[in-house]
Length: 133
Image: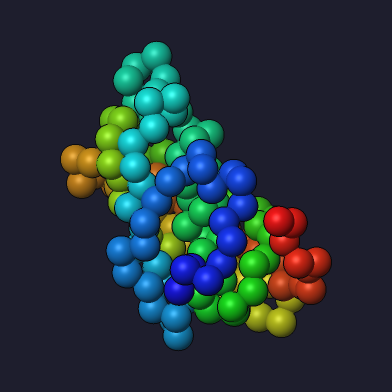
């Protein structure tokens, strides 16, 4: 799905691989590699980095559904458990795709399999310039 797409520079900060993708539904499952720089004082992934992973998830799920890269305009995240540093798994799916907005839900599980973050997001449907190379 993403093999033909040039990754933006920021993708280097949240390396991941696509584990599953349903293009018709706009659903993806990604596995994120552990990043030592994401660790906070407690040995957990700092919340801002977790939200960055959520943004990657919803961006790719929206792309899967629309075949267009769309800007995220809103993310609401709930941190339901600490997430220890390690490989983590995330899932995002389109809830509704309209003409102007796409609504999505996402979840992120820690290496221990416990749900750590639940989020909802909105992306804006618009024509964007070709991504910078």
